[in-house]
Amino acid sequence: SGGDLKVEDYILDARCQVEGSVVVSGGKGLIAGGSVKLGGSLTTQVAGTAANVRTEIAVGVNPLLERHYEALVKEQEKHAAKLAVIKDGLAKLKKIEAAKGCLDQKMKNLRQQLLEAAKSLVSAMEANKVVIRELEADLGEMEKATVTILKTAFPNCKIQIAAAYMILEKQVENLSFRFKGGEIVANHLSSGN
Image 1 (cartoon, rainbow, N blue to C red):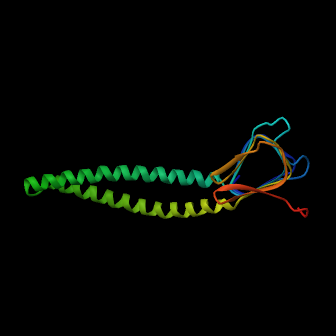
Image 2: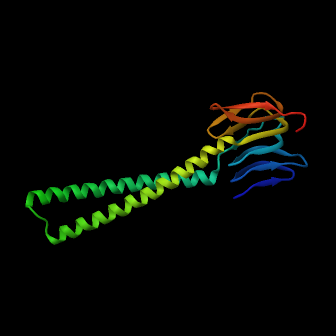
Image 3: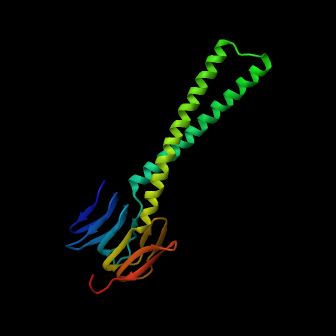
């Protein structure tokens, strides 16, 4: 989903990727089995099952932003490799020019093509750097995402916030999980929640 997702009953053994937040309310209010990956926060009544079925909840992990970020990083690597080849070609032309005193017209044309290709690659890499910095800032903001369990979370639930994760070893109730100081911390919900 490219936005928020509201589920009125349950998510069972699903593979969900959500750009925004997820709320599972009403009916069973249950997430059990599978994985739910989202960029925002998650609120559910129940996570996992009494049978300890692995249920993975990852918040602050926007799958769409991550894919875009990873694609840009790979593109930067390809551009850098091409730029290295171009620089190598220009260095060889420079050696030929030093040895011969000057380049023939074919070699001059080749040098001009290489210079234009290098300029184009450098321009594309600079534009990508700006977008990558913006995406890194957006991805860093995702550490503010939370997981709220209004009733029960069972053992074998994996809770991930940004890059930190924990696997529940015992049943817990009425908790909110958040990222603090490089790890996930849990706080009991107040009676008003």
